Every structure is written in C-alpha cells, then in structure tokens.
Image 1: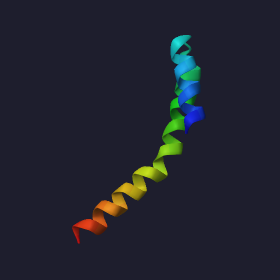
Image 2: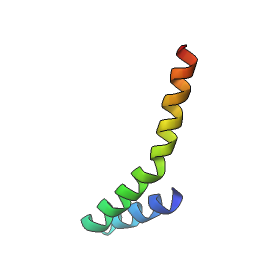
Image 3: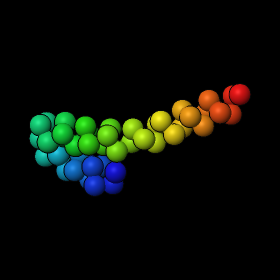
Length: 47
C-alpha cells in the first residue's frame, strides 16, 4: 500500500494523470481487503 501511495504522490506532483490513475487503482486494490475486514467487524459487532 505504501508503494502505491508513493507512486500516486509522485505522479500527482508531476501532473502525470495517466500514472496517477494507475497508482490510484493500485491503491484501491491494496485497501479493498481492509474495507472488507472493517465491514465484517462492524456487522459482527452489531449482532
């Protein structure tokens, strides 16, 4: 996840939209399991 954040930051600073979009997709892929875990924990705690 940290690599994707760095790539996004560099692309943003360079105003490289294509690379920023790829980095954003990588970041979303990296954080998706985290969101799934959070949702599962929230559902468990509400039961």
